[in-house]
Length: 113
Image (tube, rainbow, N blue to C red; front, side, top):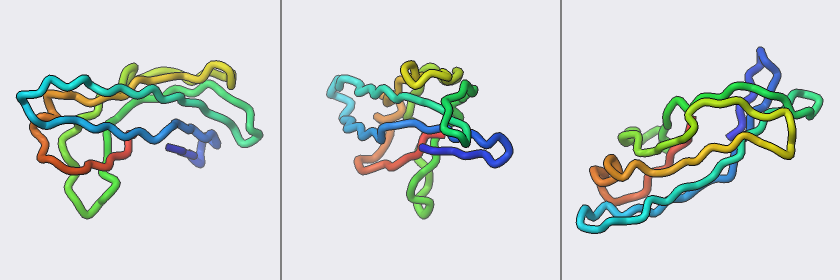
């Protein structure tokens, strides 16, 4: 994810892309997968800067299909990036099993906002 707001002239980047495989069989007690994402921000000169971030939900990658219920959990949902390349902000991202159990089997491609 890269966002470059024209007014602030700061690029916010996060990665890597994550794939979760989750069982939708209610009789199974799956282990909830969790990923760790580093978040950093830089100005136009390439210097790392501290900026605030906030998780606001998800959007479907396939805009022709309806967006499914939000089954993504992000913690912390808000924070501030570090001005050091050696200490990026990190968030944990995972699947809300209660919501995932209600989904039909299939692939759900989402962008985290």
